Amino acid sequence: MKRQGSSGMGKKVAETIPRVGRGIALGYFTFVLLALLLVSPWLDFSMKRERGAPNGLFLLAAVGMAILTGCAALWLRNGKLRSFVEQETTFRLVVTIGGLLLLTAQIVICYGGWFVTGWDVLHVLPSVDEIAQGLPVSDIAYYEMYPNNLFLTGLQGLLTRCAALVGITGKTYAVTVMGSCICVAVSVCLSAVAARQLVRSVWVGYACLLLGGGFVGLSPWVLVPYSDTYGMLCPALALCLYACMRDRPLKWFWIVGVCLVGTWIKPTALLFLVAVVLVHAALYLCGKKPLHLHWKGLVLRAGAAALAGILALGAKAGVSAAAGLAVDPEKAFGMAHFAMLGLNRQSEGTWNLEDVSFSGEIPAAKERSRENWKVAAARIREMGPGGLGALAMRKTLNNYDDGTFAWAREGGFFETIYGKLPALQKFYGIGSGQGSPAFLGIAQTLWLLILAGLVLGWLRQKPGLGECVLYVTLLGLSLFLTIFECRGRYLLLYAPYYVIGGVLGWRNLYQRLARGRG
Image 1 (cartoon, rainbow, N blue to C red):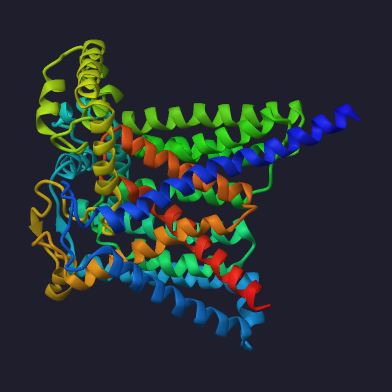
Image 2 (image 1 turned 60 degrees about the horizontal axis):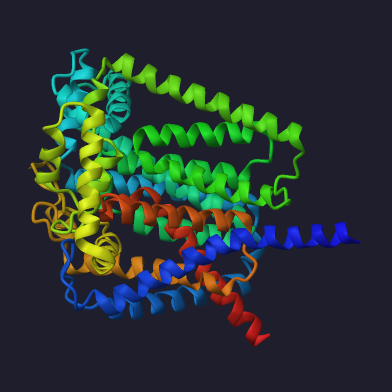
């Protein structure tokens, strides 16, 4: 009897742990939404964007949109088409057609508004062009400071070489922009499939396809062929694999491999894998095995994951070698540099030229890291608890206040514009740096719809394991950007996750209301 009681207690604790992580995430997003409503209108911060109306009005518009969407869903569910719409084959067909339509719309956006951008992309794309032509990379000093862009550059170079094999030459930028569009469109479709599988509801999948297509797929960021759009594919695919594949060693082989490849493109892509490991490890330590494994099965899955890691490292080395990219690791900026940036009160945790120059003047990696940590510690002492709290608030607003993910807020954003549709350029603010009131309003309304949905996650008392992992991932991303360099664009990588969380939250509200009527 004692053993059974102990086992029951362990099971209860194990079932509670994922919910605790999700609960912390829900508390954080409640704080974010309140900050956007109550603090943002009165506080000046570096990435603040003027939209002509406070966030409260956009939230009201979001609620109205949610009501209309709910009425439309209710009409479909009670109509004659319900049995057809709920079929798995119909869902797959709609996702496929929706993805193709989204890609077509993105091609129109590219035709009408494409441009050559500056900042980091201005370093990456000339290198891609050199790789495509079989020439040595001339700007190797950039990659020695920022080696995280090595894999992306090599990948885009190989993509451009493949395009040349089918007769597409001299179009390096256009090819890489098309790659960006494909990655985002596929990510939206994968997230819809993952959402459908997480809660076994095609209606959630349809909602994620619709919202993700409008908010993520039609974002002007598809015009920027950088790590945010290319890297988005890996977390979306990893979540889809996690939700859809049966528990076999092959599942964990692919999840680990995809996450690591994503990490070579954008380091924060690793956060999904970290969340999976934390949640599952906590369950195992408390005696509940979510995968129903014994030690033999666990060893097989660990071996598959290790093999995936080895192959991913090999892929990274292979792409760099094929592209002719070799750098001096002593010159790379490490995590200490970005922690120092994140503690810069003057720039509010965003990119700062003085900090970059300071790190760049120190030749040895160990010495640079040591000096970066010294500056970071000095800044913590100088600010004190109150100053750190104020900085955290400003960094939160810098990350979350803009539904466009800080569109066009990078230095030298519009270098040369080649688009053919002035109306589309005006809508997105291409060339001016300020989008039209319509674009800014739509983006902010959809963003607050998503954030409000995340907060409505409080209504679901017994979430599934996948939903807990999703929330812990988003919490990890938010904490990462609170500690290190922050930027609204850095949320874009996990934009499909935010969409899924938002849709699940509104679904919770609809279910509560339906039960209340019943």
